[in-house]
Length: 510
Ligand code: NAD
Image (tube, helix red, strand yellow):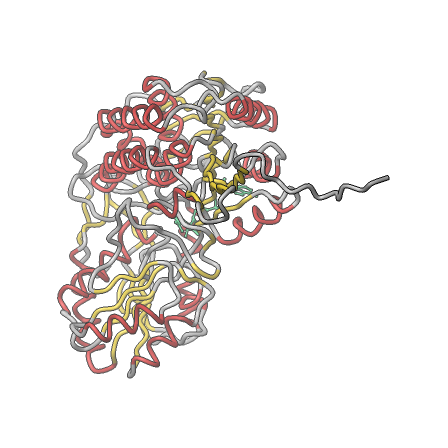
């Protein structure tokens, strides 16, 4: 192994016993009727972190009925924006108060470092506060120029019952990108977290109840994609599905939602490039490239797994990235200093390794890493920081979402060539450009097919700015006012003023 920075000690105690995650339906925590449960073994430490109820169609139907009844009787949608915002702000306070408890479970279920789980769980409170502020801004518009006896009004109304299906890589953050916004709009919800990371989502039931959210407004069902997720995508009482996960499952959801033509919002995979021009600040670019590929062990929709670097600086730039990669702290996620943790499952670890071994067979060169990694005193479900060169754009490693700590390097000579490489993918989530020339940055930004473009930075995000993907990276937008609007339906109201309506049927003299 090539002189990596590996941390095996830990700063935190392990929880005394597994967390018991249960469904939250109509304001109460319940087990599955058939008592089925699943154990989640920590990817880093191998212990059972949580035991979660495994939902069937029975619990899913119950949760949908609970949300439908709550929506239809107006117990939430008919509250004022101010009343909704007060409750959402209280949830934000409770999230902050419980952030450490959430972060420890999140770390042990997902394998991510505790510092990043703290930022994710504690930081999510800001999403709740921003959504709370939006609850008071819902308004349509008025049309006062349609004729002297007509007033037109466009109303915004909550879309109805929303099912929210989330992945394992940022369970609490992604929940918070969706749920408070749907609630701020006046919707009622049924949430299904990933079967691998159910606990922090289940824990929020307590906060919602303590903050005063009426029972039935938000329901949580734990379990697998089939049957829970598929019923949440097809059921006639669901008005909208808000999904984050893989492109393959996103397509299945679109199909099952199609029968009842429900609205579908999708946040899917990415194969995100960063392009480095010779006039860029190379130190900052290399640091951002390292962060972009190793953050969350590369198991990140925004992972900058494709580096496209100008030929003139490619050799020096890659050397610099290799040097930084050796310094990144890999290892025990319960160590405060760790920057990169474990891989979510053994199967996923094999999949990452397969991409590299296939690329090597096709002529690629592994300049760093390229093998699983064992962390002393912790476990074996880790992967080395990996940099792969001699890539061609047609290789699977250059086109598909590897979802691991794996960087591929391509080179370019002209802006035209760089843009062609950037857009030569089925995905369109995010892209980045590094250059001191504002004209280069702007031309790149306008021509890159991506929902977010970063210039001279990577992965900066704000609740105010919409997030989402073009092409097969998704449809619709999340967060920001655009994300909020996704949960609102538009209704036009036409009012005739005074008794001036001309009769359609002509009077006859018979
Ligand atoms: P996944 O698609 O396997 O699972 C996501 C969720 O869908 C889980 O809750 C799962 O149980 C559920 N599911 C599975 N089959 C289903 C079905 N047939 N019907 C309904 N629900 C079903 O994704 P994952 O492995 O959990 O997450 C990784 C993927 O998520 C990556 O592709 C990543 O890029 C993507 N992601 C995207 C974003 C974004 O904002 N664009 C953010 C995070 C993750």
